[in-house]
Image (cartoon, rainbow, N blue to C red; front, side, top):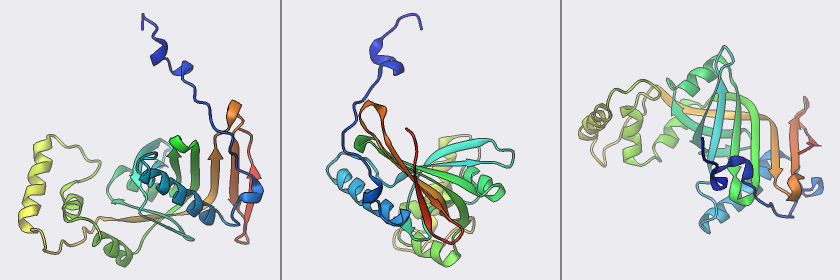
Amino acid sequence: MTDHDPILDPAAMRKRYRNEGLDENDLAARPMDQFARWFKQAVQAAVQGVVYEPNAMVVSTADAEGRPSSRTVLLKQYDEQGFVFYTNYDSRKARDLAANPYVSLTFPWHPMARQIVVTGVARRTGRDETAAYFRTRPHGSQLGAWASAQSSVLYTRADLEASYEELKARYPEGEQVPVPPNWGGFRIAPQAVEFWQGRENRLHDRLRYVAEPDGSWRVERLSP
């Protein structure tokens, strides 16, 4: 670049974060309970138009050679067993997880100056659980799961739309769409969960739960 525009300079972009902090004494005993607290607040912020898609998370995987890749995926369930999302099992992320089940999730709630980072192990959900979720999807999304060979090379947009229209004719609105055999869920069992709260002067709060062999959780504070 020959002209320097300070408005477009990433190094000059700064945001003053709030004073509200995150203290160890305020944490829930287990990370999924703490996640539920923050997720509820993120959903409330979404209702107010502050956060967009609070269930959006960045899923980072690595293939057998350790080459990483990331993409944004929607969280569809969470409980004491972990975090669940759904995808095509022939997609890049699914192929990565077949070769290397270790995964990282990031919930980037920037307007709230909050971030949650999860590291854990991915396992496929059972077919009954997958089918139960698939039935809740809108009819068009069910057809889309069949129409798209996710992550494969698509030569034209018209090819994708033609596939969708063919499926739409085969399974019109109101008719049950079968669950694709190569489509399903992954449940991420957390091994560590970090809660990040932005603070003034870049002195952020970072509290991380780490799983212990006996099933309990150790909490440690990280330097910002």
